[in-house]
Amino acid sequence: MSNGAAESARSDGCGDPSDEVLTHAAATFALLASSARLHIMWALAEKDSDVSDLGARVGRALPTVSQHLTQLRSAGLVRARREGRRHVYSVSDREVLAVVQLMIEQVSKGATPGSALPQG
Image (cartoon, rainbow, N blue to C red; front, side, top):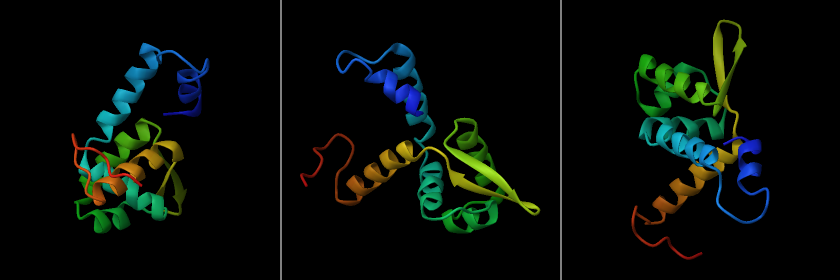
């Protein structure tokens, strides 16, 4: 979610977010409801990478990784820059990345969907 959308969700300090903000948030969660895309985001949090590096890291075929990157890029979650003949990808939305990292860390601690999150 971009800063503007996040700010509009809490601009008055109370009340519900707009339907537009909720729809955008739901679309972002739907996009991230893929273990492959979550893994790509996790890997890009560690270091910028090209498709070949990401494919090796996440254990997926290059065309599959490329398709996932296209979706993440279209949503504004990752960006690409050219370095010679290759495209190097990086995370463009650090706030969404923070949500991804928090979820993965919570699940790693033993939380499962529908269960209470560990206290800490």
